[in-house]
Length: 296
Ligand code: CAA
Image 1 (tube, rainbow, N blue to C red):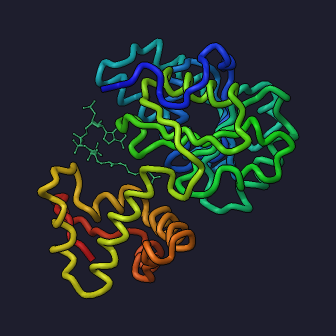
Image 2 (cartoon, rainbow, N blue to C red):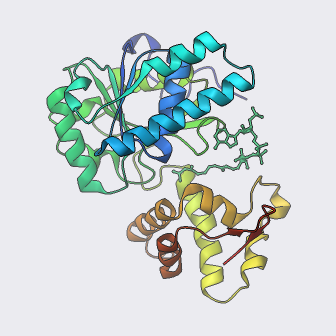
């Protein structure tokens, strides 16, 4: 049952209004939540990435998804056009100067994230709230180069963003109540359930998922047949098998999450060279013409 006020949530009245959003990164997660922000908040969303090509790909995805919503009758054609017009892309971060909420989802590398936030802080206003969608890095460490780390919060979506109901809101020792409140209120406006988690490796969900999928990977690494492991969780009624879920998460992200957990708790989490090999290969499953999937 949904609690009225999530544990540890500050007063809603502290939340700052959001009139413009900046999205750093145009990849798998960023493009999905950029769409959700524009759909639910109906404010301008500016996407930035290192190349115009990446940005165009991200915006192409968003336009395609809006077209699907139009086909399904979930938005009118006027609304579809309005939503598309609200999403723009630029490699020029100075366009973030009037954004109230800037959220990052670049690749999972600590120093790259630290640097991108330090750079963004040069462009945004004093009052802008900063958020990171990191899967398992320390949010406090990501903000280590910020002059104002109190305005940084973790805001962790799950894939597919349109469908998964949860957002983990990660509070660091520096995050202030205004920032936390803005994150909680924003999650509500996205029609998501938000939980506040501590800034620990994997927060809550990925800590559990890393255990589950890491053990599955380790079982294969140590000789249990792939098919046996892949279907071992079927009786739990999960919507996907273990390795389908791993592929959905993304093999590079999955390998990174597992490494982060192994580094933090070497006695509790296994590393998997095999998973890195698969991540380089790009996928676990090959699909035949009929959509039937074959494991590695
Ligand atoms: N984008 C947008 N919508 C999507 C989608 C996507 N990628 N995939 C599915 N959907 C929508 C469909 O459009 C459909 O919506 P409508 O009914 O409104 O038309 C609905 O979801 C159901 O889709 P399908 O019938 O095609 O497929 P399904 O019933 O087999 O469900 C699934 C697909 C939702 C992905 C389901 O298999 C599922 O929930 N899987 C588990 C996903 C999961 O656990 N994700 C968390 C991963 S962990 C993570 O992301 C965190 C991290 O940091 C690593």
